[in-house]
Image 1 (cartoon, protein in one colour):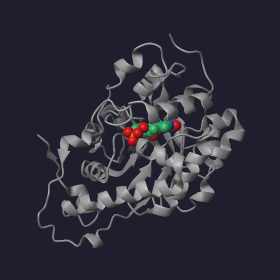
Image 2 (tube, protein in one colour):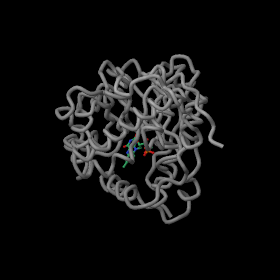
Image 3 (cartoon, rainbow, N blue to C red):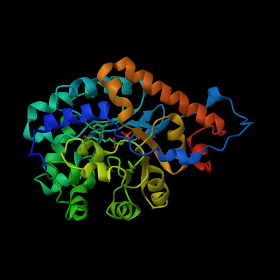
Length: 338
Ligand SMILES: Cc1cc2nc3c(=O)[nH]c(=O)nc-3n(C[C@H](O)[C@H](O)[C@H](O)COP(=O)(O)O)c2cc1C
């Protein structure tokens, strides 16, 4: 039995509680299927490894984006401000959580409005692509982007999550032609992301064909949103679908040769080793959500620690494969772990 339509605020709070308190990761990270090819004499100085990258015209200290999480409810401002200050300090990009709520409740903008805490990093707005079938058009999208002075917008595609969500929006008809018409009317670049179920090659190709240049494949191996939504239902639907989808590494490998398309490795990135493997498998940057949730509720300093650890692990992974910079890392051939 599905619950009746609830308030977005309650739903977001339930999501945070479930992600923090329940098992929401049904599969091992797909990065574990690969090994870094260890080089016993890397012939480089670890202190000279260059991890910097330019992303949307801004400089990052290493190729990482804090993946879209929440906003809106009471804890939204705490989460977003802590993440924004930490992202600015360490030099990584930040994706905000879904901002659909601000069209209906303009006062909820306060919890997303964190540009003042992160003036120099790429900041991204977020909304579900399916909202193009529920009243959203270029005006609403531009309003969302402008309201937080974002450098771009993540549109999430999440059919399985919406199908399991008791109050989900499941009309996914004609979204590709609608997106194609929208692109030229939106003031900033668009990135398409999944939420942990993966983007298949056919979809990636169709997105590239209409002019999308960036996708975050966000595959299986990390947080399962079918499972998270499943905890909010009385029946077995979410449990049944919890491990369905395309793994992050399969999604990267299957779409990495699509001309004009840049990939972001998301879904199950839990260490700097996973980040390095994602880049060796064809991504330009990596992203993660769940590992940043509890520190985001705690403090800016706790988030800085998580990000600095990730960066340190990433540098050690690069050193172990003899990669002096990101283009060396991109050329590394991973080995299957038997
Ligand atoms: C608490 C939480 C809230 C999230 N909210 C959003 C959201 O509003 N919009 C979105 O595109 N993705 C959202 N996600 C999905 C993440 O951005 C990410 O794609 C997914 O969790 C897989 O990454 P992970 O395995 O590192 O958690 C959320 C994730 C978490 C953990």
